[in-house]
Image 1 (tube, rainbow, N blue to C red):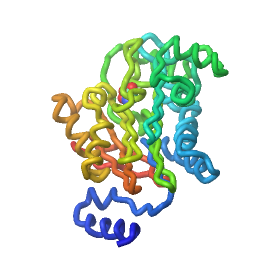
Image 2 (cartoon, helix red, strand yellow):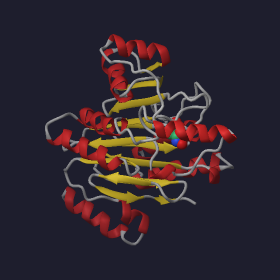
Image 3 (cartoon, rainbow, N blue to C red):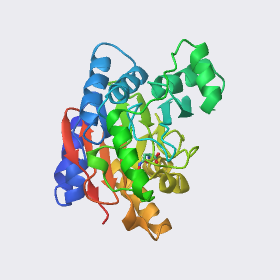
Length: 313
Ligand code: SD4
């Protein structure tokens, strides 16, 4: 059976089970890009454009999420994101290539493209992760201009509103956007992922979530596939959710089954799972994809199409 008819047969069999029918993709040998939330549509377009114009899969994931980081209307990624309790925007990002290289930069102030800094950490240092003032210094030394820290008008308004009550409560599905996690597979089967965020709104100054943590917010292995998460980072770190998904795929799970396993683990380990949201995406080396979330409302972009993931609760 050739590759295309194998995938077609899989799709036919899976039609009996809605979740599988939804999520096994007949992508053939074309590039595959998936990313979180509605804002993933613009990111995917840039990632696909990078692949089509001959860029590497690492170029594609970086350029894809840079679009989201640069969107001045985005309240959850980039410098326009919502601040911490002190009114300071701090940004986190990581990037991983399926060959095992990885870079991360977090607790950043005034860095417009944390993903590019994460890539520099991956490519120009022997390290995986740089944090805070040291990361910012490394950025400046490598030609990245650090901007003054200022809140966008919308973020300032939201923060001032929050200050009136100062309630800490993770929100479910922030206006259909949150962290962007993007996974790509090129026509040769090479994979990479990128994840970037302003993190949990009104967090304690210094808090870092899952998004820059390799194995939590993002994990990619060319031998298997990749996964990325969005939502309440603490729950994702506690369970190494992206790693769970990739390791499930290593031992035979489809990307959809792997995503469902990771979400079930979060449920198992958190009595309060009804109070927060986590969404996860996965791709595998065969070019299949999967998506699942704790709660309804998790949207994701599949190449040029917007989809809604199934949910546990
Ligand atoms: C984080 N996963 O920092 C990110 C984004 C987020 O609620 O906060 N979502 O945890």
